[in-house]
Image 1 (cartoon, helix red, strand yellow):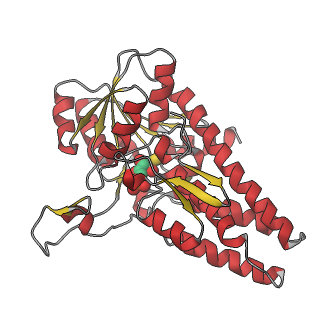
Image 2 (image 1 turned 180 degrees about the vertical axis):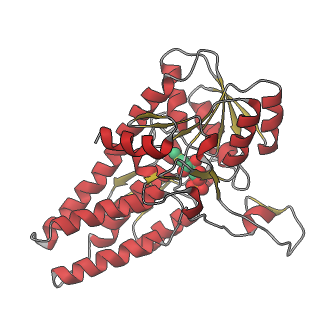
Image 3 (image 1 turned 90 degrees about the vertical axis):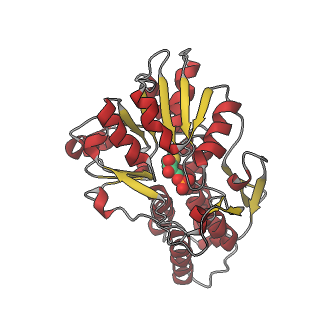
Length: 349
Ligand code: MRU
């Protein structure tokens, strides 16, 4: 599918407005930071790697027209912009990684004039985008080796083109396996409350001629009981040093079900999703979102009693012992994660 989720175009950040899908493929040109912050918060742009790119481009967007009196003022403004973008969504490691990449460029080039640092920031944001495109393809190459002809794969949320720049993590593996000539079937879990599986994954896979079947989240157990699932592949928003992986709420359910039914459960994520400073999943910040997402069907019509109490965490953490392997752009990482993650991520640097 020849579409780009996010890119720099016409002096602005061009994104697909994912809240409009699948009804309309509509692009948005983001020209100021407030609009970017809202687009991230409202999930117009979403998915961990795409958020990394949004953060990197966002830094440039915020600083490009800033008239700095001196370097100190420039640095202060950069920090302010970074803090603002960081306050949009807390869970995806990639967002913070994107911000850090940009700030490091400024730190390392303090001997240069502000105009040169701005130009370097633009280059760095483009590099973040290119690296994600490459990472997805590398990941897909490693992951596709695990897929057998005629496999049926269950996935959740959207870890595809729409969550990255243009190929996907979990779904990239599916695209690659198909390109290799394997015949596959995919079940997409609708992913309540915001239906990324129904609205985005089903749309994306269908457009790419993948045999996809949509299910409600509570149908996964039945499918596994009937022996219809060979593998589960999900993305991740943040992976701790011990392999605990945060991903869209409901991923943990699938991991528990997979363990009970002896179905391999894989996480696919680039190195930029790992947070080795965080020892275990207990320390991963989990975003809680507004009640309306649960009480109203995609903000359109009420489906529950007015004023009802709601719990709406956007992510859950799958403990490492339920993860068969983590597929990354640096290769496939298997347990024991506590030693193998650090080793593997370092090895190919
Ligand atoms: O709330 P979202 O839609 O941003 O959540 C996204 C996910 O949970 C994805 O599975 C994850 O970011 C991995 S994307 C390659």
